[in-house]
Amino acid sequence: MPNTHGGLSNGSGALPEALRARLACAEDGVWVTTTDGRIVFWNRAAETTLGFRAREVYGRRCGEVLTAFDERGRPICGPGCNAAGVLKGVGPSFGIPTHTKDGRNVWLDVMTFTTNGNESPPFVIHVFHDATRTRQLLWDLRDHIDRPSEDAERLTPRELEVLRLVAEGLGTAATAERLRVSRATVRNHVQNIFGKLGVHTRLEAVAHARRHRLL
Image (cartoon, rainbow, N blue to C red):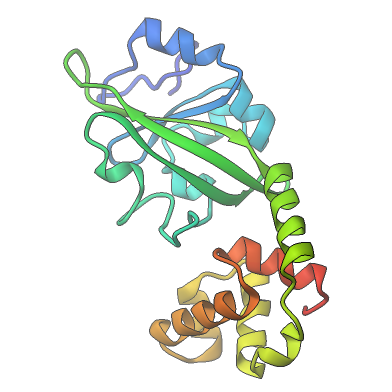
């Protein structure tokens, strides 16, 4: 059960009081996980940005809440997770295309840190802000400056089908099952779509396709 200060009262230990108080009043969103990815802290700014109350996310893996992949296609939580390889100090900065509780698409810019673990189990601290408007502006500028031509004609019927399923929120495994093909085939189609549309993430591909009426 969460305590009144935003931590978990379980056997995994708790954030030091001074650190928890500092993160609680941060203007940027903050969530904190154990090294296995379970959320033990979620501040008010995170609630405001993403719509999830702290009590709704405590004890869950961040990948269950932020159901998305980062800009390199790695899952937010699990094998290949950005935070999993961070051992100490300042970790990597990365972007997350994800959704709010009410289904609104957002882009989060995230930086991770870890505690040193001298007085408590190590925790991974994620500090983030909503960069959706900035990302949208960059996409619009790129389209204006270097707009791909005849996108719909350059995508094959199967690539368009994959793109539609991506827009529905299906991941690689679900898309492969729907189309009755291998996951490797789906990944190849997705990479071809990225190359033809001049994008780097699934969120960018969907946003581009909707702006240009490919869906």
